Image 1 (tube, rainbow, N blue to C red):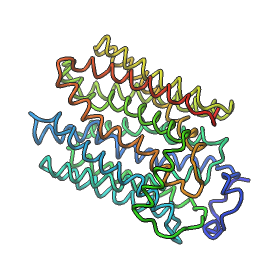
Image 2 (cartoon, rainbow, N blue to C red):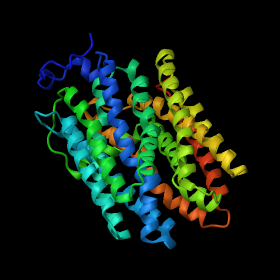
Image 3 (cartoon, rainbow, N blue to C red):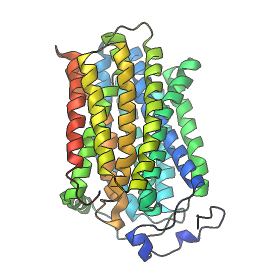
Length: 423
């Protein structure tokens, strides 16, 4: 029987039962899945359009001579903030008690904080202001994703998690394309662009909040910092969890290294006449390939009951895109590799998310453990500009950067096969 979204919220008062402890049994509906995907569409737009377009444009206007260095600093600081905030918000989300629902509470509060942070970031006129505002935005994003990702383990049966993972990562490139298209079509300034995507984030969130009801869990005593550190260490000592975390970290790092300076690569490395237009074309190719690969990989993984082979092959596809662009850096190859990268990353994240939910060490600390896993998704885009900026400034430049993309993704594929508990 499918969930009834029109019924009142008895699920909030339902005690933790055997089915919940071992994993949910009731399937989620298409409507629930669609609304869940819409939320992710909003978050991808709000997080990645600034990284791909708005922040580079804003920093170029503020300090054109040091734009590469400034972008690296902005992302490096935000990465450090996310490194702390993600597991902390996850652990606190697990311990929260609210009639509104602990996941819904963190999702709502985090999204509002993130939206406010976006608007404040767009209003900055100094590099220091951008650094502080964008880093503060990451706290809101961390809080929201703590609740949003934990919902999968709470509500979605294992045989639907490939499909749900597709609903998460399918909208990723679409969110970037729509956001960039809006900014380009209406000639929005960075300040206006930040404001528009902040509003769209909240618009995408509201329908899901109206439909979703949390499942109640036993809530333990307040968490101390020492307990959090011990708990994180315990999770990472679980070999299956650690291999999954390492693979996700490396593959996301490869993707971030390959995309973080795309605008500057097009303008400074390839000297194309319309960098923003070429960026949009590359992003559309990334989108189309990613959508197809995400949908196909998620469904096939569910039907075949296999995760590792899809995750490993997708990582290797990203590796191929990096090595190809390193060997022949030109606009045509850039477009081809954008499609390869999009397909590889889309398929990887679609199935990897399902794989991760099957190696969580403890059902009672899902948000905390997924918060650790989210470090592997959120931190790489933040630290990649630091690494890429240093490489671009060297004599080897962009070819070395893209070779590193290939090598990092290839190692990530190897780590997946260290996981033994998941087929």
